[in-house]
Length: 103
Image (tube, rainbow, N blue to C red):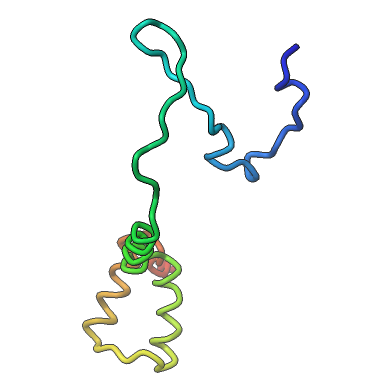
């Protein structure tokens, strides 16, 4: 009997990429037999996590851009007129701020 038919279905939002991964992975060797696949030699370390987080912090995202607008308007962040225009132009180029309609 197919066991997957009796498993409870999970919505796509609750599934994670690791749901289909099991610890016991098998590969076919030269003779055609299935043998356990050895685990990767290097796991994702704390140093890797810190490097990824640092790169993510450096990246300009829509949330960063939207949060910076009120800070500039309220005077919490002081920028020159050229920097402000560059900030607005960057948002428009990404499609986050559309020019006002001319009616």
